[in-house]
Amino acid sequence: MPQPHDSASRLQGVPAPAAGWATRLRPHGWALSGLLLCQLGQVLASLLLPGFSADVIDQGIATKSSDTILRYSAWMGAASLVQLVLSVAAAVLGAQIAFRVGQALRADVFSKVHDLALARAQGFSIGSLITRCTNDVLQVQTMLTLMLTMIVIAPIMGVGGAIMALRQDVQLSKLLLIAVPILALIIGFLTLRATPLFQRMQKQLDGVNTILREQIDGIRVIRAYLQEAREGQRFGAANTELTDTALHAGRLMATISPALTTVMQLASVALVGAGASRIVSGDLQIGALIAFLSYISLILISVMMLGMLIVLLPRALVSARRISELLQSPITVGPPAHPQALPDKGAGLPLRFEAVSFGYPGAQALVLENIDFALAPGEVLGIIGATGSGKTTIVNLIARLDDPSTGRVLLGGVDLRQIAPEALNGRIGYVPQKTYLFSGTVADSLRLGNPQADDAALWRALEVAQAADFIRALPEQLAAPVAQGGTNFSGGQRQRLAIARALVCDADLYLFDDSFSALDQATDARLRAALRRATAHAATVTVSQRVASIQDADRILVLDRGKIVGLGPHAALLAACPVYADIVRSQQAVAEGAA
Image 1: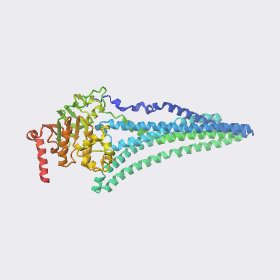
Image 2: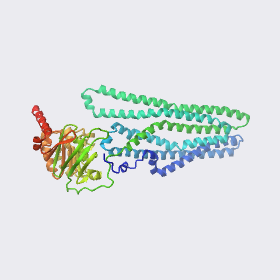
Image 3: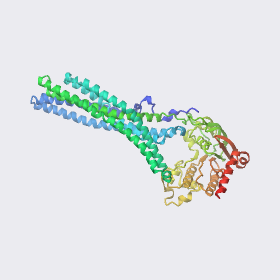
Image 4: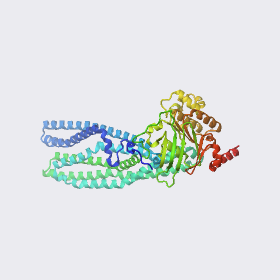
C-alpha cells in the first residue's frame, strides 16, 4: 500500500490520545481562568460561613452581644451572596466550555468519517459511527461539564473542610481518618466493577443502532416477506441485552450515593456523641461543635461531588476511548503535501492506469490485478464483467475514494495522489452505483457539484438526462421537494436526476457506475445518445451489467476476477474475447426468452 500523504494534516487538530483531551481546552483559556477564579472564590466563601456561624453563637449569642451578632451576620450574608454569584458564574462558564468542546468534537468526528477511505470506514459499522458521533460525544460532554464545575470545588472543599475542622478540634478530627479511607475503598471498588459494564453497554448500543438502521432501510423487504415478527424479536433481543447491562451498571453505581451518605452520617453521629461529652466537660464550645459539623457537611458534599463524577467517569472514559479510536484511525487517502496542478479546464484530462493493483487491508486476494489502460478526452470506455470482478473498484480509484496498492492512476499526466481533493473533485462528474439524493429541492440536489449553476444550466442537464419531462410535470418544478434519499421518486427517476447532477458539474471526466440499470431500453438509448453529444469534450467511463448500455463505446474493458481479459470495441471483442462473447450470448438468450 502507498503511504498516506501528510495524513496528520487531515486530523484537523485532533489530539493524539496521549496528548490528552486537555488539548481541546486550550482555545478556552480565558474562560477556564475565569472559571477557576470563580470556583476558588466560591469555595473560600463556603469555608468561611461555618466559622462565622460559630462566632455568632460563641461570641454573640453566648455573651448576648447584639453588635457581635449583627457584625458576623452581615459577614455571613456577604459570604452567602458571593458564594451564590460565583457559583452561578462558574456553572455558566463550565457549561459553555463543555458545550463548545462537544460541538468541536462532533465536528471532528463528522469530518473524520468523511476523510476516511471507503476501505477503512467499513471497519466501523454505521450504527457504531452514529453512536460515536452522538451518544459517545454526549457522555464526554456531560462528564466535562461536571468536571469543570466540580473538579476544583470538590477537592479544595474537602481538604479545606478538613483543615478548618482540625482548627476547631483536633480530637474530633481523628474520626475522619476512619471515614475517609472507607469512602475511598467504596468508590474504588464500585468503579472497577462498573467500567467493564459500561464498555459492554456502548457496544450493545452500537448493535441496537445497527439493527434499527437495517430495519428502517429494509422495511419494504421485511414487509414483503412478512418478517416483522422475526425482526421484532431480533431488535427485542438486542434491546433486552442493552437494558439488562444498563440495569446492572445502574444498580451498581446507584449504591455509591447511599453508601457514601451512610458512612458520613455514621461519622456525624459519632462526632455528635463525642462532641456532646466534651461540651459537658467544658473542653468544647457549642458553636465550635456546630461549625465542626458544618465542615463535616462540606466534606460530605465534596465526597458526594466526587461520587457523582465517579458514577459517570467509567462510561465517559469508554466513550472517550471510542472517539479517540475513530479519530486516530489512519487515513489511507490523504491530501498531498505538495499538490500538483491539473491542466486548465477545457484542455482535456487523459486518464491512464499503469499496472494498478488493489486489495483491501487484511484481504488475502487482490480485487484488481495489473490493470493497464488509457483513455483520451472525448473517448468513451465501457467496463463490463461478472459481479465482484472489480468494476466499481476501478471507478472508486479514479474518483480517489481509494488509492492503488501498487501502480499509478494518472489524470492529465498527474498521479491522483498528488492532486488536491478539491481540484480533483471539481473536474469529475460522478454517478455512484447506489443512487442517493439529499433532502431539499430538485435544484438543491442538482447544484450539489456546482452551486453557481443557474436554472438554464439545470434544465440543460435535465434535458440530456431525460428527466426534464417529469420535472416539468411537477407543480413546483425545480423547487419541488426531494425526500431524504429521493424516495419520492422512482428508481429510474432517481438515476436520471443523479446523472443530471453530474452533468451540471460540466466536468472533464465522467464516471457512470451502473447508472442506467433502472431505465427501460428506449430511455437508455435516448439518454446514451444525448450523453454522447453533451460529453463529447470529456473522457467518459461507463460501468454496466448490460451490453446494450456500453456496446457503442469506443472501447470496452472486460474484467474477470479482477484481471483484464479483453479491451477493444464491441465487434472485435465478440470475435476475440470468449468471456465477452459469453456475456453477450447470455443476455441475448434472456431477451429472446422474455420476448
